Structure formats: structure tokens, C-alpha cells
Image (tube, rainbow, N blue to C red):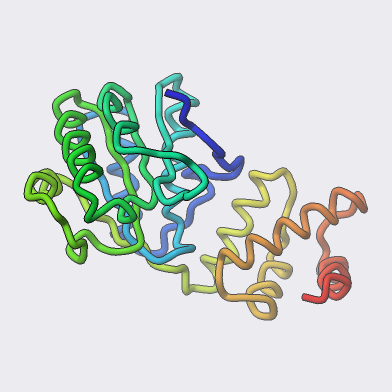
Length: 233
């Protein structure tokens, strides 16, 4: 199968910040399962922008770095001509990551394929990681076979980062991964004056990265203010 499509360069476990202890523990369990597969399945639930895709792609990268096979499929991407048959046979893959999986719930052929994948991956001892915007308990499931298969899935609820320091830490981890330094005072300025939402801050970080490369300058507070002023931010 083709399918590690569009993995972001900075999507790694090292750049993800887990504010909730329950999430940090769940990610620790996930990484242990990737290192020593037990046929486990995990579901990441949460609103857009909480980091679901980040974790899915981080897991794929984790496997790639260890020469293990993995698949990432964005099921909600309307530009991809995906059909339920795409899931058949994936139980042979060490890690399968399915994004926007709640977009296929209520469609019987898809539900059958998903139920089979969950069950067969467990038997094969491989890991399944999938994500969606709503909790499993709110799904309008059409087939009892899927409801039964989901009993074995560990749900993990992701929330937006709310702590200012955690937001700054996340930005600094991403900047290090991209090869530049984000000083504390710049991070504080961005969180206080630009946005308290990580997705928006990441967009700004990309603008700052490009400006730093073009101008061949470090990201001082004065330089950042001038960049954002020119950009109308």
C-alpha cells in the first residue's frame, strides 16, 4: 500500500505537548505498543486543531524511523477516491492510522470494513490508531459488529492547550525541529498578542521561519514585531 501520504516534517512525538496527564499516559502506552506490539487499538477524539493528525503522523514517523511499515489514510479527504476496500488487508500492516474516521460512520460497507480491520489487526498483533471529531459514544453506528469491535478500543480525549506556558513550549519544540530558536520573550509575545490557539500560532511560526531564512536573522522580539507589522498581523 502507498500510504504515508503528506506526513508533516514536524509531526513527531517530541513536538507534541500533552497538557492533560491522562493524554500523556495514553501516549506513553501508545509508544510502548508501537515498540512492542500487542494488537491494541486507540481512538483519538477531539475538536479540530487539538493535535489528532499530529499524533497519527507522529506514530507513522516513529515506525518509519524503526524500519517498520505503517499506513496513514485521511478518510475525510474528499479529494481522495477512497472506497471501503482500501481497508481490506491492512491488518497485515504493523501500524494503521485512520484520520477523520467518524466521517464513515453510518455507512454500512465502511463500518463492515472497519470492524473487520479492528478485529483482524488485534489477531495479527498489529496496532490500529484512528481519530475523529466526536467521541465513540456519540457515533450513530449502523452495524452491531462494529459496536462489538469498538469495545476493545482505548479512547483518548484530546483538548486544546489552554496554559500559556504549554503553548510556548509547543512553539519552541516545533521551532527546534525546524532548525531555529524561538526565545521565551518572543513566545510570550505571540501567545499574548497574536493568538491563544496553537493552530493559528503555528501558521505565524511558519511566517516567522520564512522571514528568518530570507533575512538571515535570528528571531529577536524587535524583528518579530516588524515582521508581523508588515504582514498586518
